[in-house]
Amino acid sequence: MIKISGLSKSFGNLAVLNGLELFVKKGEAFSILGKSGTGKSVTLKCIAGLLIPDAGEIIVDSITVDAANIRDLRTIRRKIGFLFQGGALYDSMTIIENLIFNLSHHLKIPRAMAADKSENYLTLVGLKESMNKLPSELSGGMKKRAALARALVIEPQILLCDEPTTGLDPITSGEISELIRRLHDQFQVTAIVVTHDILCAGIVSDRAGVLEDGILKYTGSINELAGIDDEKVAGFFKSPL
Ligand SMILES: Nc1ncnc2c1ncn2[C@@H]1O[C@H](COP(=O)(O)OP(=O)(O)OP(=O)(O)O)[C@@H](O)[C@H]1O
Ligand SMILES: [Mg+2]
Image (tube, rainbow, N blue to C red; front, top):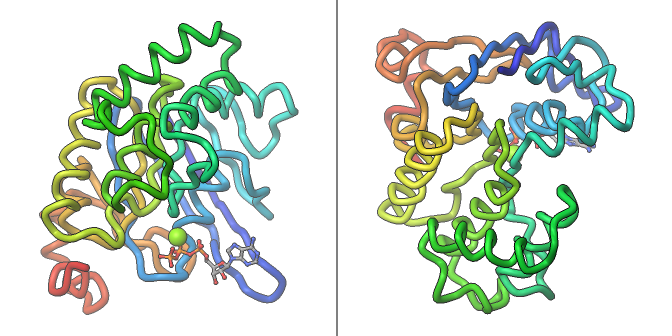
């Protein structure tokens, strides 16, 4: 469960989030739609405790993120799998080493067990054959799948995905979206997916909201959003990127 109340965050004079409210129940998948620069990544980073909000409250399961001490933050980060916008794979490590590193960072398990687990997750996302390659040897879609496997290998209760399909062709975008939905259903994680790809949002999520002027202006099912009489919301449906 993720509950956000009155979340505000500014950088200098730039007010990015301005009293954002959001409730995502356990096991639900929610998409945040929004134009570039509206604060989608900032919202995810606040949830993961990577940015400190100026005001508001963020509760992840029973922990209040904004008031968390170091130990609580560690617990929260162990619960959260984060697919970063650029993938954020370590360039000098092979794909499987990237997963093993993430696993051993969060959970103290023997290396052989970490390697087995990592291979299982890479198999799930269809990358078993490429697990010994470096990120630079993978295509954009393969990198996204590797980043997804790395987010999931810690078996998180919460999955945060930042633009999982950006930069991919429509077919690969669809495949990645289907994969996220399948893994979400399989592992019953609570998921927030940030995107400006309405097709991705429709495949991945139960509900979505549009981030604008620092708040989630509209929330509802994709069908409900499609019916909203607002030019900016309609824009997402007219020209999916
Ligand atoms: N650490 C930071 N320091 C200063 N400004 C920041 C920082 N992080 C984000 N911003 C600013 O906050 C605003 C929102 O950034 P954010 O990355 O959340 O946008 P976004 O909605 O994810 O956009 P995109 O779709 O392009 O990824 C931008 O104007 C950005 O420059
Ligand atoms: Mg972003």
